[in-house]
Image (cartoon, rainbow, N blue to C red; front, top):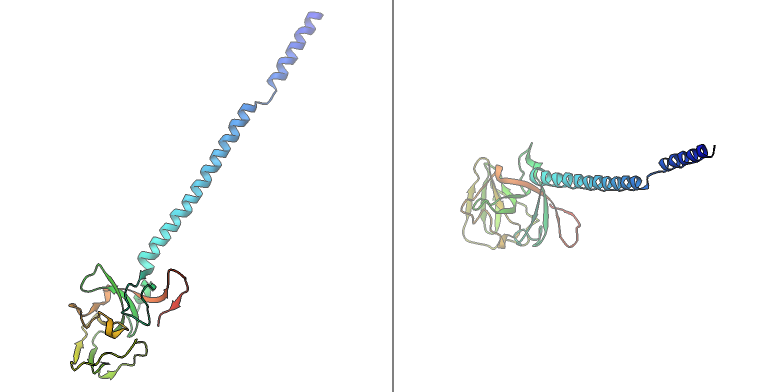
Amino acid sequence: MTTNNEYDDLEEIELSQSDKPSFENNSNNEENQTGNSILREFLSYMKIIVIAISIAFICNQFIIVNAKVPTGSMKDTIMEGNRLIGFRLSYLFSDPKRLDVVIFKFPDNESENYVKRIIGLPGDNVVIKEGHVYVNDVLLDEPYIKEPMSVSSQVLNYAVPAGCYFMMGDNRNNSADSRFWVNTYVAKDKILAKAIFKYYDSHIVFELIK
């Protein structure tokens, strides 16, 4: 009887040991779960970053133009150092209008972008004389210019071709514009955007461009 009891005791001990939880396995599972959680979080952040970059790329290429103005040719409407937000879709279903401020490919060097005001539309006759601008024999009202143009004895006459625009800067006495370019006019398909807002890098307060 004693021998049988000893075997029974041994069996109970073996059974109780096999029923004990494996702390080593639990530890490994927790580490795996932690690793998977970190990976999922990393992939989630990467997804957000990729989406944000994609949206920024699409906006910059097809919806807006964000440009910095290096000169004072558009004073006092736009100052040196201003940044511009232009809307690329402004002329998708309509033509540019007289006095719009636009961003376009510089016709003498299309690697550069310029910003000027549209003065002459396709088919217009623009005459500059005695410090004033006439469009189709009508004196153009220009409250936006920085100062009156210097008076010259020379009369400048421009017949704007179809599909093209005559551009001038608001700072008339310090603006390289259609008056001085080799390729005088800007074709419609070279107009990138209508300038809508301006702001400074140092303080992002948007102002409407008029």
